[in-house]
Amino acid sequence: MNFAALVRSAALVSAVALLPATTAGLAQVDGRAGPEFAKLFAVYQRIKASYVEPVDDDKLIRGAIDGMLASLDPHSGYLDGGDLQRLETMIDGNYSGLGLSVVMEDGAVKVISPFKGSPADKVGIKAGDYITHLDGKLVYGGELDDAVAQMRGVAGSTIRLTIFRTGREEPFDVTVTRGVIELEPVTHKLEAGGIGTISVNEFSRDVGSDVFAAYNDLKREAGGRLNGLVLDLRQNPGGSLDEAVALSDLFLEKGQIVSQRGRARGESIVYNAESVFKGDMAKGVPIIVLIDAGSASASEIVAGALKDQNRAVVMGERSFGKGSVQTLLPLGQTAALKLTTARYFTPSGHSVQEGGITPDIQVPQLSDPDLAKREKFRLRESDLRGHLVNEAALKDEELEKDRKDDPRFQQTAEQLKAKGIEDFQLSYALDTLRRTTPSAMARAK
Image (cartoon, one colour):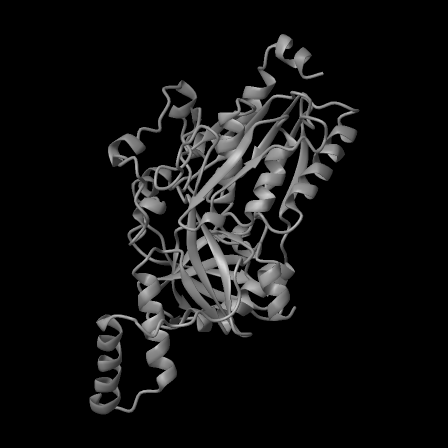
């Protein structure tokens, strides 16, 4: 895939929702720029003349660019080299490695999320884990590109990761066998009682079409009609805004899906349901949307749209809270600027930034044995350094009120495992749909 094609398909799988670039080429520096540019040039000259060792211009310019973007928000950035290669890999959808989405945070390699069903997921690596060593070699303080390159390799080969997990006193080692990672953005399964589950793992190309196909496959398996649907968006870091709109439109007859408001006139857009399928494809079948702290960006758009339009019950935990839109702006042929250009809002006018989407029914993931220790350290947008502030001035203590009094929530992970329940949130959602009243089921016909 060449760079031009990469920019055209800027629907990458990441914790940000990207839009195709609306401008191209290098920005021209205004010759009337103020004295601040003179300060920058003066610092550059002093470093070149007086630093203890010679410094390459590339290093200094990249440092200046990174510093400018870091002063804005956590999601703006400069992409070239390895960054663009990772973007291309994610769009292509397959590679040999562990199946991890990672970032560099304060010198440490941090796991954003393991891809479902990947080698990393199967050995129990979790979102929020820190990778400190690879095969016994310290990676703290190094380059992310180097760490990623070491984790990739021939399928069938192994690598030993040293993990630091919040809530555990000591680091621990885990050996992972590399595999061919075929990114499956959409998977589905028919559960007992005629309930379908559709898991959307990222919002890459054609996710809307994939969900449409998955729903029809489930209907055929169920004999022509489903009694309910669980749309699982947990640990989905986001991706294409267009695909989030397309997925939402499958289940909405009319009305607004999402709006975005930016500084530039062309960045303020309202997306409405277009009734491509002459209304709700599911014809009123009860829907539960599952979210958690790892549901970000495009996932929050879908959950917010279906919640505000009263089309689905949202269940799980408060989502990540990334309510900004990034635009990919090419800089020549080998680099690009990922710049925050707008905020997005749910149909009710709610800004997702910081606060995220609050579920209608709060359900903790009790099947996670580390839940109690990890919960207070759970990472969301509001925890990121330099994040955009919600204009509604949300209070942290209000955001953390996400518990519902239910005796089933008093069970331990060990008790659930003894009952054969590996995923409490999904089990709770399925049970809720199975208890749906016959009259509601009749309306779903």
